[in-house]
Length: 202
Image (cartoon, rainbow, N blue to C red; front, side, top):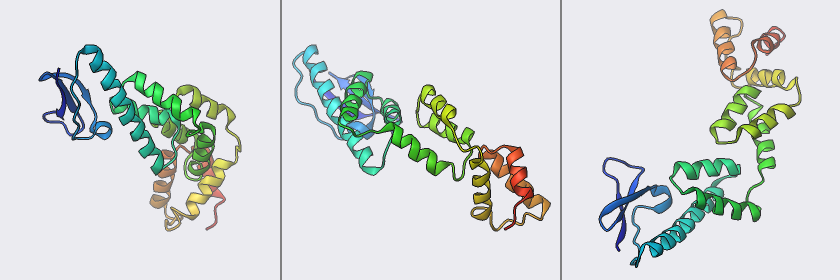
């Protein structure tokens, strides 16, 4: 049996794994690279054993590379691996290893993420960003239930007015409306925006 990986025709982010010249499965170049050679495969059992072991090592290396760049929530890395076509069994084994070794601290990640994001975003927008990163609905609801500092939203709005929007002439109606719309897109409530603007002095 012969196994090889070649680029998928017409795709930049897919590779075809060929088994005796026939497409067996698709993999992602971010994990497998674009130049991969396999040793000879004896039979089907040998194929699964060697491929699974190779995938495990490649996924493991990919996670190490990701973590060397920045901190991640474990669920975000799981999402990235799924998007890059890693098998579910490999994702589970790799993530279990890294979690057990302490490479992930999801609670600290959430606290840090909220601390940085709340300076410029309201809770709904923060939760949406967490969802896009792959965090579970359970994790998101936990953040919603434990959200504190009701006045933080007003402080964040005021901070944005003094920094990002400091050059806007809030005395001019059209400029003020643009700022209001921008703040609404960040998830801040109209009521809080209005209260802060009414009492704001640059």
